[in-house]
Image (tube, rainbow, N blue to C red):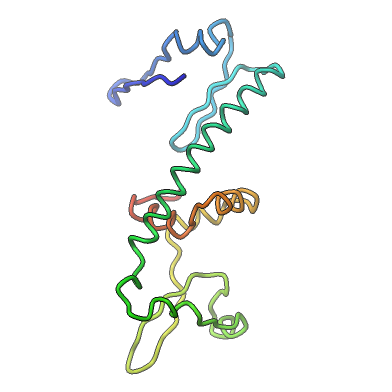
Length: 171
């Protein structure tokens, strides 16, 4: 069940509706643990029973599935919307160039970095892009989570665009 909490930032406290505590079975707990991170809060009893742990995991899975689905849709929409090559007449063949990692290293460019290109005086320059804050967040994802997201249809390039558009700041 979902509850909508209206929070006045001027006030220092926020109350959890008693009905939410009753439905969750937390109304009788004398000690609760609140887990907080950027943009989310999780409230659990101090010690979970096996049944409570299974139910919490099931709820987190359901929420994760919905969040991943929303993220996948947004990332696909953004990637298509913001691709610079959409108006290019060569867009079907412009992704076939490969620069060997050894040449990038020789030029002082990290082969794992994203690259930017520009044309100057008849030459194509390849430069490393400075990583925005959103890239740092995505770089911190472990390989299992990264795989789960991409297997679920999330385009990480689209997520990067969204993070940049939203002005995400890595802390």
